[in-house]
Image (cartoon, rainbow, N blue to C red; front, side, top):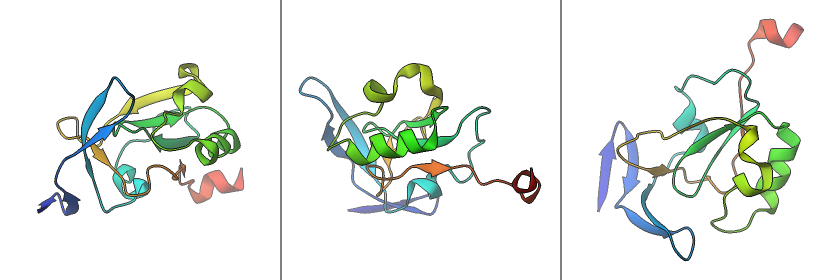
Length: 122
């Protein structure tokens, strides 16, 4: 069954086994992580954003290269937090706090903030 919420196509909730002891009900969306965070306010001090297996979007202060490398080498349903550390998390939020969504590319995407033309010249 397919639902349409806020113009985002999602499938029925799926139980995702994050660890052997913890399960979360998340909905996998057919949109990218960029599309999910496109209208979010970018937290000050963050360099990039990723998504966790439970749908939480993390904004990182770590160098983009480090986050990208960890994202590429992290397998399956693993969180990036153990490898990058909570001290590098600037903010954590869900696209919709009442419904946990996963972007279709959550296991690979590292999103960087769009810079204005003014910032580019600095």
